[in-house]
Length: 271
Image 1 (cartoon, rainbow, N blue to C red):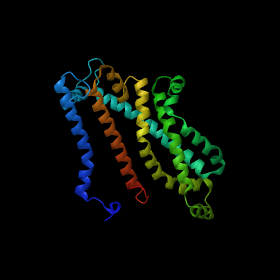
Image 2: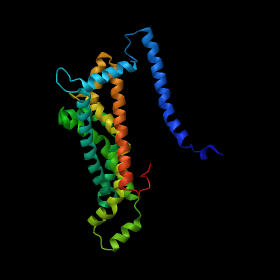
Image 3: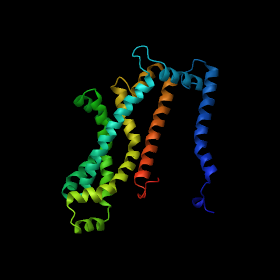
């Protein structure tokens, strides 16, 4: 049987999923044990016990200065910024995508503009955002919005252009106005694609959030990572990175389940 036609059974698939993570953990803890054996004060590769102690301290012991549980405070602050940024981006991207992909008069100026905007490195304009919007919450949210909205809009525009012309003609034949056409024909076709596009943009959104928090913030996961780096506190940095990864994975999984349940008819819902 050709390799391209071979598919792992369920136990083998589970093993293949676990194997790379197990190898990474084995390599890490082996290297950590060797370094700590040579130098017990080594901070580069902390042991599991050291990282566990750091997580317990941040998650279950109130900070002496603020009285807050830092891990949960940082998580809540970051998720709030991320949720606002993703929500604004989704709404703006959907509106721009429908307009550019459905209405030729809007598509003519919007399509090249979105293409150009999607090529601008968002992190390059971060200083401009801080100058214009200040160092508060707005600049962090705007970095996420500016960073992912053009790409979302372009993807939805392309999807709108792929809607069969027959559907549009039939709707117009039945007397649908432009507004009705967009709401009853175009919008239902784009909503599942919007959720999939958001899944694809999650990594970029987290990147922009961490960058903004690292430069100008008083709380948040990115802020905490860049704060403790001064002390080479890898026992804090590594668990925070793992926690961010877990949160991002849970968000991706949630969007996948929402797409599958809300739009079971969509061809990409199960992927």
